[in-house]
Image (tube, rainbow, N blue to C red):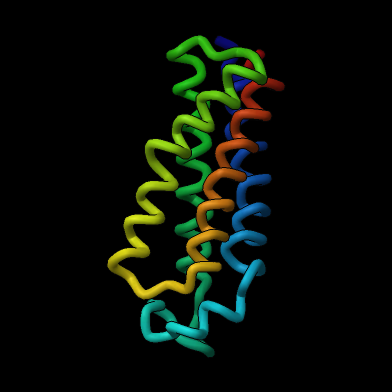
Length: 134
C-alpha cells in the first residue's frame, strides 16, 4: 500500500466531504431546522465553532475508516468502491438517521437532507478511493 496515496485520499475525501456536509446539513432546507428549534443543542446567537470543528474531524475519521476498509477488502476500483459506499449507507448511515427521526422531532426534509448528506459523503470517499487507491 502506498501511504502517500492513502493520506492524500483521506485528506481529499475529508475536505470534499466537509463541503458536501456544509451543503446538505447546513444549507439545504436550513429554515426547517427552526421548526423544532428546541431539539437542537445550540440556539441562535451561540458559538457553533466547536460543533463544526468536531463534525469536520469526524468526517476525516470516517474518510480514513472508508479508505482502510478499501485497503483491507482490496477494493481498488470505482465500481466496487461505490458498491461498498452504497452498502455502508444502506446498513449504517440511513437506518441510523431514519431511526433517530422516530425518536427525535425532526422535519422530514431535514431527515431527507441528512440521508442525502451521508450518502454524498460515502460517494465522495468511494470516488476518491477509486482515484487514489486504484
